Image (cartoon, rainbow over all chains, first blue to last red; front, side, top):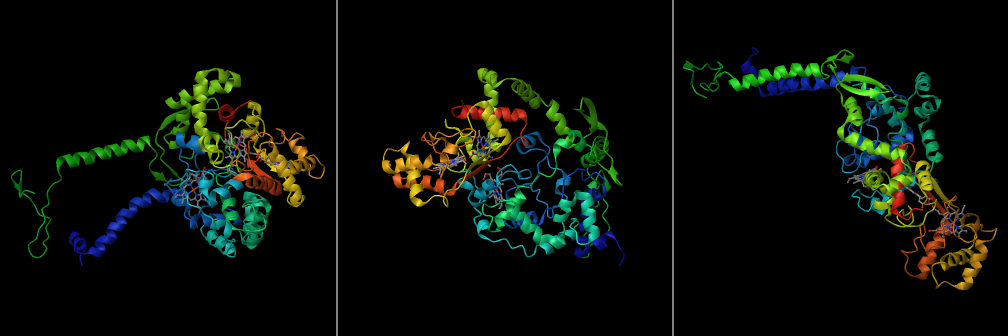
Length: 246
Length: 306
């Protein structure tokens, strides 16, 4: 068949394919360069992948659909800066898969909620939000305290994330690279071969859910919430520094 | 569309469906064509002004249009939302208005702020917002928490750590840990019962006076050692954050919510048995010195500041 105006117009399948190609070009031109432009991810110290316990907490966060009401992206506007703190950097979510930026804010943004409240408050608030904030419309999540944390899949979970580019380590060479990049303490946490030991040790190191004897889903979720937005020390940088990356 | 335009026969696209169905090939309307040309011109102007084309590892940034100050030097960068925010924070109309007040407040003493109605009005309106964003989740809107027990009421006259501006500022800046050990395994039920009667004897006149007298002895004994923290008069110490037990104001034990003497005793016994551990976070890392000052004035004004 000769390729002509007519052959496209009378062939619905071909028309759909060509339309999709034409539209994708628009999308690709906007998105693809971000993957190779040097300045997409700001060069800052402190950002690291999540520890096994935090990662479990993050999985519970996505499982419970917290993202349906909470964004994790502070935009560079004056009002957001004054309410939530420093705007989010691309670097801060470079190890997030899937990211939790979102745009739906039924509740407040959580990008910098880490260390804002006590563990005690988070536990009470997640169990029964209205017992601390009477006006709240957030649902109760009482089962987080009842469910034991199932961490049997944590090593596999980290392996899967490694495929997407998160630098969890399996080999000695990868571990050494992490020591160089993040320091020994963090590198130990990123070692997939010791994932379960690390998870249990972190859960023992701090009283997240108010009961050290039990390891619950609440422990993991609170550990995750308390690290949000705390990795970068903004006092080390001039404000103008981040503007250079845009 | 008309078969005739400007007197000429209109061409067709050249192909026919179902034998005789044809499509006219009319020229584009002039208004549409000019809009198209105008948007081409707009695009070129846009490329000059804003970041647009990706080029290898970089991109065309557009000309430098945003100027702000950094470390005493003027910096001019290409248009981007971050530079725009810095500029707005430094020279935006609203920011400047607010900054004028903030500078004044940060230099004034607490006494000067309270004596100046203009400054007080500013402090209260701005601190109310700060309190809502940072403190209300625990202390409740306006400083009155949802229930007695977890978080202290900032709207009453009773202070755990002192109600002077210095005390309040210290509390906000560095946080506090309210701690009382659990006595459930140290003391037996009769002793705890006696202690509860003693503690309640300050505010209730229906308690068993024999038990209360026995409780007072235990309170002041080495075995329980309540007086170390609460003092022998049970009035509490600001340096320990130990509650005043004589003032009929309750911050941990939910006595006001309890119905009848037995329930009130139970509420007090619960505290003695289980102890207390409450954390007020530190805000020095999250809030600026001026913001802490605003909040101090606000909190001082909520209850009976000393």
